[in-house]
Amino acid sequence: MKDFLSTLGIKEKNAGTSTGVNYIENTSTNLITSHTPSDGSEIASVYETSKEDYEQVVKASQEAFKEWRMMPAPQRGEIVRQIGLKLREYKEPLGKLVSYEMGKIYQEGLGEVQEMIDICDFAVGQSRMLYGKTMHSERPQHRMYEQWHPLGPVGIISAFNFPVAVYSWNAMIAAICGDTVIWKGSEKTPLCSVAVQNIIGEVLKENDVPEGVFGMITGGREVGEWMTTDGRIPLISATGSIPMGKQVGKTVAARLGKTILELGGNNAIIISKEADLEMAIRAIVFGAVGTAGQRCTSTRRLIIHEDVYDELKDRLVNIYKSINIGDPLDSDTLVGPLIDQDAVDAMQNALKKVEAEGGSVVCGGDVLENLEGHYVKPAICEVENHYEIVQHETFAPILYLIKYSELDEAIELHNGVVQGLSSSMFTLNMREMERFLSHAGSDCGIANINIGTSGAEIGGAFGGEKETGGGRESGSDAWKAYMRRQTNTINWGDELPLAQGIEFDV
Ligand code: UN1
Image 1 (cartoon, rainbow, N blue to C red):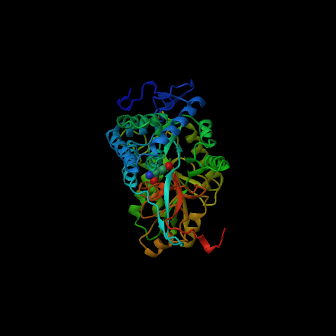
Image 2 (image 1 turned 60 degrees about the horizontal axis):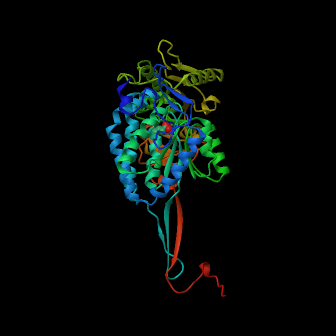
């Protein structure tokens, strides 16, 4: 048994209840077994949430909401501050578990926990800044203002690739806003969810806060559908694929609920002939092979000026040859395994399609059969942007190279996909840079200059346009999506003038 598992309260064989809390007696008998993608071996199992348990979690969330919303926001911030401190204590074991259960390298596992800590710090400050505006009324002796109220239980559906950080962007902001949360993590990484519940649970206990403030359920699509169809959950924040998001969006819209959707990306970097290639190469490699290409912000397309195309291609191919692939917990490894066999198959299929459509695989793409687990060599392909396969997000390390000659053409290619999450341009030319960031430039939610597409900081609003779903999470004023706005007008005079000067004498 690995030490970090017991430190995080993960028991061998059965890691605990499906809800990660003590107030619910588990009624389910279905087990979800978690395997490490690093060698395919079993880690531990978690019960799938039964409908009965689900009902209890929602009721506990509704009950806790009544108390939590009445606590002053800065006091809620204090609880989140303590969660941030607790996460600092558990950073190493939790980072290891993320790496072991999801397959990203340990450095990135630590980075994920750091992202949780950062959003806690941000949320603490935000808890004193849930600002509403005041307006000048058109009527004498009237005052108008707006205020923000919490929504209620917020449903969070998160994906395997960021098993802890994306949850915390939502949960910590929702919590300071006065909402309670119900979290369904991916059924591929249930132990990460249990570990986070255990850490947060310690803080709740120490402060006598009801456990229902941070609820959790475990399961797959069916359990997710209980949430999306449930009118008691006013907001669903979902991270995942575009097809999944379309389903969630439709279901929640049918009951006029709110959504925050953070779906697939097809992120590109434009490499100008005036780019600093040294810097560009480092950003490209991190963006394309980091997390084995399984970030929604992973770099999938490179749109390269014809003058530097051959040089850049050769240099990337050379670097790809020397990338260390292997055990994600080994400090020499840069690329760990893919999450499962389906991901390996999807990558192989994508590479076949590249060739069938007239493109070529320049390097990589092999499955490393000699290693236990789901290891592949990151691939570089030469393609045209309009290929059907290039239009899709394949959650694997495939980097598509596309050539351009004029900047207008590059931007058109860049925007010529259905997704709109992250984007970047490498150039030292300020005219090119400003053009890329202008109204007529990148159509994505995130647009960077001289840094890659992945690895966003929590302080900015995170999300994308078009089929990426339009939602924004994390920093800036993304907190507003977790609250309801109320406009208040108060008449402190002794007359009752009507707006728009209407006369209505009775
Ligand atoms: C995701 O892949 O769903 O910007 C989130 C990044 C990370 C978050 C990615 N901070 O790459």
